Amino acid sequence: MTDIQKVDLFVIGGGINGAGIARDAAGRGLSVVLCEKDDLAEGTSSRSGKLVHGGLRYLEYYEFRLVREALIEREVLMRNAPHIIWPMRFVLPHSPQDRPAWLVRLGLFLYDHLGGRKKLPGTRTLNLHRDPEGAAVKDSYKRGFEYSDCWVDDARLVILNAIDASERGATVLTRSPCVSARREGQVWRVTTQNSVTGETKEFEAKLLVNAAGPWVTDVVNRVAGSNSPRNVRLVKGSHIIVPKFWKGENAYLVQNHDKRVIFINPYERDKALIGTTDIAYEGKAEEVTADDSEVQYLIDAVNRYFKEQLTRNDVLTTFSGVRPLFDDGKGNPSAVTRDYVFDIEEKGGAPMLNIFGGKITTFRELAERGLQKVSKFFPEIGGDWTENAPLPGGDMENADYEEFRNRMKHDYPWMPRDLRRHYGRLYGTRIDRIVDGASSLDGLGRHFGGTLYEAEVAYLVKHEWAQTADDILWRRTKHRLHLTEDEQAAFTKWFELQREAA
Ligand SMILES: Cc1cc2nc3c(=O)[nH]c(=O)nc-3n(C[C@H](O)[C@H](O)[C@H](O)COP(=O)(O)OP(=O)(O)OC[C@H]3O[C@@H](n4cnc5c(N)ncnc54)[C@H](O)[C@@H]3O)c2cc1C
Image 1 (tube, rainbow, N blue to C red):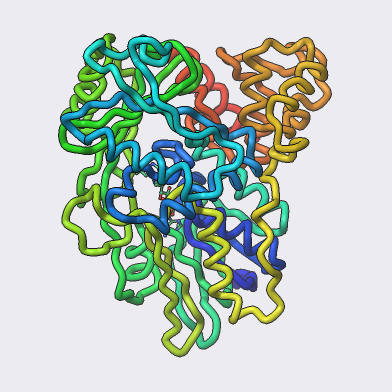
Image 2: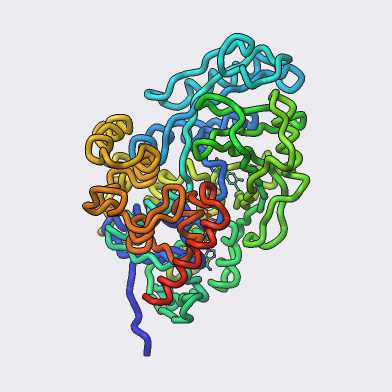
């Protein structure tokens, strides 16, 4: 007979919401298991636009509360993870045909003042013919605006939450779909099955949390054999990555003829991330890919504004994700709310918390509110704690990344700048654990190309649940964008041999 592990909370889904809830719950003293059917962040949470933002465009849908909460959250998250979340300035070339200047100004005024902005600089008006931010923009655009939001490494945000959850006692199981969850009186009997080894595990949980994102209704209906009055709308969004084609650190936000806005962000030093689209999606979330028409749509949006004219040949790669939006009955996919909704169902037995919708930006607050909602089931539960708690690697003096950068320079004078930057940005103060006493590049072991050394691989396998080459090259890091195809193939072969030998 298999052992049954008894826990307070069983979380289904290792995206940002599941990882955030597991972390918050573990920090409140609850016993927690999180299971993820694939790799952590392999669902929507590694496929976002990678912004911690209020969502300027949501103001047009009168989502003032959502925008305000998200704006406030920007500075909270920046403080707690300054290595993976940093401020970015967005330049908006004004095109009078799409939205009048007064409307853009009003939106930016609200954006500046709705949500407790302390550190981030406010909006300013630009003369694109004169200011350097306008150099890459076509001469037909003269006026522009510039405002602040934040950048985030979305997949690493998930991993950091999972690490913190685990360090606070949670068990994190990857490649372990929850295959069944059944109520047995006041508890849930939950079964997972490892998709690599086939091993099954049994759990008894007081509360089931369904944070399965686009699969939320699959978990309600198929896995838990239940039903919910709520539903999700699946809305696909795609991005393209091209070589960066402007000077400077700022991003751009352009308005398209269909009134949608497209982000053109600096990415991975020498690249640009361009997105997104909004298309109702009915296929399997696992199989989502960018259509040719989406790629062309994004290229066209850039070409309308910039002197540099992109073609398909510039596209280095694409990725797509499925937004699990709470179905508020709106027809237009762009208009569907980005807010989240909880549904607690008890049916006279053990409770289940289903999460519909949400954004990367609001994950911490979603977790906090979710735990407040279910605290009635756990009389001993601790209070809110995450607002001022750094995520792993984010414990920097005054949340000051610049200061930390100088410290790295001092501590690792032998390390090339791009490697120091890579470790600093991904691992923050945990850089010491990767370097592990090495005092030269040789000490980091085998070199696979770019900034990928064996020491990082060992760290990711040991501390971050990395099991495949792609876990390392694409979700824990973005080495895939910097290694040649031959280097990637050689790394994959080496990694698989190591795994077989282990
Ligand atoms: C194109 C696009 C751009 C976006 N841009 C932004 C942005 O810039 N800023 C922002 O704040 N938000 C953005 N979002 C929204 C944000 O990405 C999502 O709201 C968020 O990632 C959803 O997280 P989640 O944890 O709910 O879902 P997911 O990340 O999909 O996680 C759910 C997990 O559950 C797992 N799962 C499913 N079924 C099971 C099972 N039976 N057993 C075990 N595990 C299971 C899945 O494998 C998956 O990993 C964007 C979304 C998209 C698609």
